[in-house]
Length: 506
Image 1 (cartoon, rainbow, N blue to C red):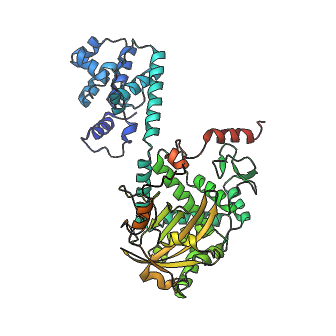
Image 2: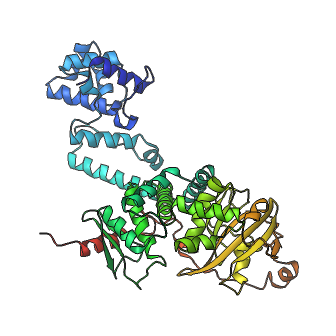
Image 3: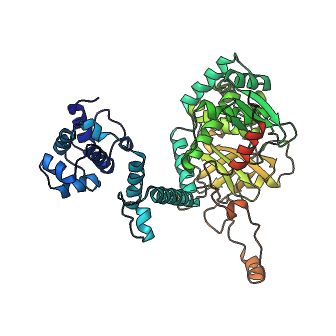
């Protein structure tokens, strides 16, 4: 049990008096409501009335009632007097643990009724006293929790998603998209399975799962909204069988699932945390497939030869072009001193993923978000869709208001249509890259609408009042922000899947 001096330090620290030192976070400390309920509980347990406790501490019964109802946080000297009168310690009164379940419910309801959400409803407050039946209290608190859940879910708006994406991209830019702690984790994992050099085979990926205590199970009925499912109870990883929505790289889904486990990811509290976890898992997966030491060696040799190529990085480690392009952004600035930008663009021209630290100006909304914005029709990421030769690398120079950029791009197919994956650098760095000799060159004046957003005057005159297009409704428009802790994942489907595949109890 803590001494009165320690209790004073904790209490004053919370109130802004003496420094709190190594005290618990505020949410783990008693507030006025909890202190009041503990005083009331101890008073009634001792068989004392308000009048008696008030007389013992030299205060009017009404002042004691205000303290017990959590309307006023007592001074430390008052707490000491109350503790002596009740035969308890100050630490007993400062405990963050409500004395009973009913007290915990009363505190929760009081807090809710004092909050902005309840105030916005325009309802009268419920008097939280002993006359309120326990079953009614349970029901009211349950309704309040559901109201809070629905409000939080509704607050997960497209605006929040855009803000979260903007903040995450700023963090990535500040670190040049390089995370040393994840590189170290990848190296330790590879060392743990004895993988020294070269591309990671499927066998090594499976060895890594075994090393982490998991068995692999390939199934035909993996929930359609998932790439993999981990059963933490039975230490299983479920992956799609060959031919049933299997990833183009069968190692990728496994490594991303294992990465989330290794990094200790928990159920995300908001969309920003969901994005951060996804980026971390993708990064660690790529760092396993393209180890930093080997990838940097290859890239430095290519830079010395002025032959940097995303295709060579892809081929050397047997990964997809997109994975190689992502990985290049992790290593280019930190190890090669090259600023870079990356884009993944749908055939409609909409940005799905983007990163930059080289000064390129992506289209953005007022919040700074680029996801969902249309890329200029003259950028490499758009012009590549018109190129018939899909086997040879395509490169292009684009003159923009912020400078000239060289970009190399590839088109890939997916269930959602075609996407271009592009990596670009400012003109000053193009000397290190294969493909710099391209004669393809365009001019972009975006965000000037006359560049490519505004139809030519002749066409506008002919068709402005004589057309009525019907937009194709995308799922993202009908449900701009998927609900749930894991957006886009049907958890009922996942839980039913796990139940059907769980080992029989012995």
